[in-house]
Length: 147
Image (cartoon, rainbow, N blue to C red; front, side, top):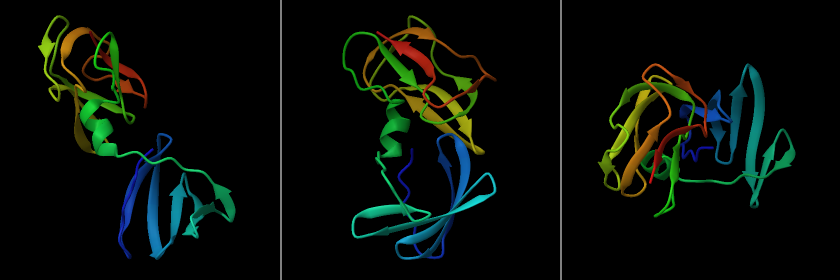
């Protein structure tokens, strides 16, 4: 899930549960969300989020943190680095046995015509690389395992 900050009159393409979606802000607190051709009215007022008039619950995370760390948070032991979004593997920067520092690039994913470098959340040794160049990956799929 992404946290999207948008000013009035702007349109952005976002991903919602792996589905491409378009968000059109109408006015402060009101937007249209278009997913697979279906239009949903999203409003936020009084601390409540409504989608098509029904209350929705949402958890927000900073996507920059997930992209930098690949979702891994543990400092020791085996750690799986997972895809934060669906995409295509375009470059692998590490190999098994290689030692990496915190923030080191592990691989590059292409999603929605943008390339995103997946980085190590902590220092360690690459145990496995579970993908190869050209693979299409799903959100949450294990890409690299660190020890």
